[in-house]
Image (cartoon, rainbow, N blue to C red):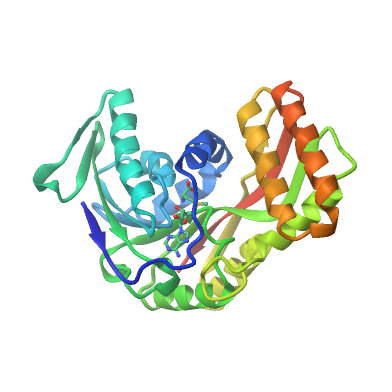
Length: 300
Ligand SMILES: C[S@@+](CC[C@H](N)C(=O)[O-])C[C@H]1O[C@@H](n2cnc3c(N)ncnc32)[C@H](O)[C@@H]1O
């Protein structure tokens, strides 16, 4: 089921599976269905389209986008993290069971999820995407996707990927790219300091050949693919975290504070006080958060 490719992922950013699980329903509610439908129209003539998902994590995008395909199709999940990959397959089987679909492993090569509209065939490759497009099976897929990945990558990396996709006329669908605006409600005095530190952290090198795009990701994806003649569609996909979503609000506040602390040493005391106050608000069901993202669909 999982093939090992390329080099060991030195310097790859690590993500916690519990965090990816926690955010999955917020991701699903945030992604723009209009862009997903437009992508499906584009692959309409393919009898059994194959999607390559970069930085697939626990497979959250497959569980969302797969429903739009509505016919037999294939997924190749690519990630460097073996634990997340194995969790992706377990979660996929659980999700299938939850809706009464069978999941089978013929010849142990791929997971087959038997939806009423046809099987989803899912396999994985463990690969360091820092080397991409090297190690990616671009000649045997119809679409390249990713979700919450492009703010980690550098412009140089994206230029390389876009050139490889353009040569093969492959569409690129990139969901949930941060666009740099977050709002914690109610406001607190440390908000600006935390936002500044968080923004600096987003531009840190995340192991993809240079400083991460962070909130520049939507603009850079659009520019780089448009330069190859792609038509670029964009749609907002904000996380809307209401007060009753205590755990998500809490984790977001904590994550922002931790990221800000890496860069705002002199403001450390204020950031810690901010995190404590935000944690208390989250526990009391008094913290709401909105994080802006954009989805992009680049069609050749
Ligand atoms: C923010 S998570 C997104 C996961 C998933 N797409 C989702 O939306 O839930 C980023 C993913 O990129 C993967 N990743 C980060 N750096 C990587 C690298 N150099 N090579 C391969 N995967 C990498 C992480 O393991 C993680 O699964």
